[in-house]
Image (tube, rainbow, N blue to C red):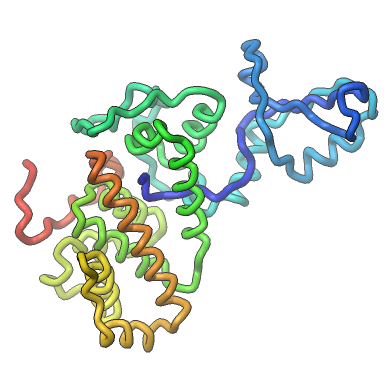
Length: 311
């Protein structure tokens, strides 16, 4: 699975809502809504949207029998997404996007990772339709490009959106330190061999203000001395959970419990479980790194002991 998520909220960047006349709305005030760009092109589409207070206030002043169109603009969208989206922060000063110095919107129907040369076991699907356009726009604004994984999982949008939803919910949890959870996810990715998750989470440590130098060393964490005892226990726990069968010990959980408390341990465990789901799915489908970290100038990740360089 893609391994990242979006909090739920508004559906589109440019929405035009038309208040239907009384004859067409016997059960009260109802609206026909669609992306403004689609309406301008004459496309016969409509989408369900969640209108915020500003739009609801504007609608309340419309005569009940009028045909009325309300534009929902980019500025409105940007204002609201800055409030609801916690899973991947909106572009802001200091945040690096994929290829931000030379970024131009890309056609993700044919783009499979910029300059990265790799082939997935199931070719990415063409991301089309109203929902596809909205998803591409949202992700491009947050990451700079649409990851290859999204195209692969677009073959089954229900799975993709479920993954986004779960990932978004995980990002809202706050019982466990964000750095510990990020390091745990990277440890799972390194063990399983998911280059996409390893690269993306390394990229995100920079954007979240976490310790990039420590993140870089996670593939060889046992051989370096930069991690604290608690961080080493978290990394060990992530690897132990990812074995088949799991090799978690009572002593390890007791140490984590004593340091973090029960709520944080439960949260950490669930994050590691999600990491296993996303990393193993990506590896099985042949989804490899899209080079997010490299485009932001981060040093290459340390190599995992016993793993030969690909160069």
